[in-house]
Length: 109
Image (cartoon, rainbow, N blue to C red; front, side, top):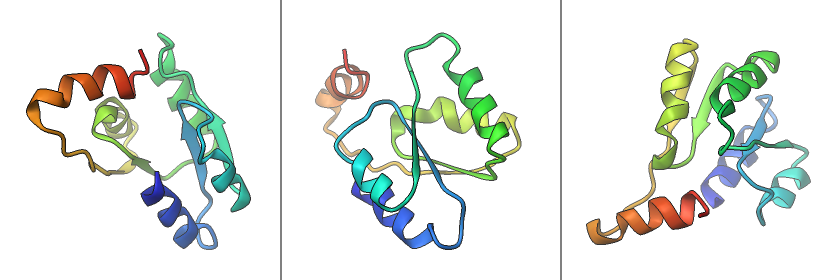
């Protein structure tokens, strides 16, 4: 989302950044224009967390930024890896719409 793009613009000259995304969405090109690697990860895979953990270790990632309330599993994984993390929670949905957004929008069902 735009917040991640903003952060990437600020940090790209001082930090090595890699973007991990569940799909090649409309902002993939924006990140690539900044010269950033965008890696598509299959969040529906049974080995998703294990695969992501390996990719983070291979790239020697020191800080992880998770950009949605829907990715608490990644924050927990970062804690297990003793990796610093930032969890950006920007969703503020009415209670009666939470289930819809969680299942239909973010899980792409």
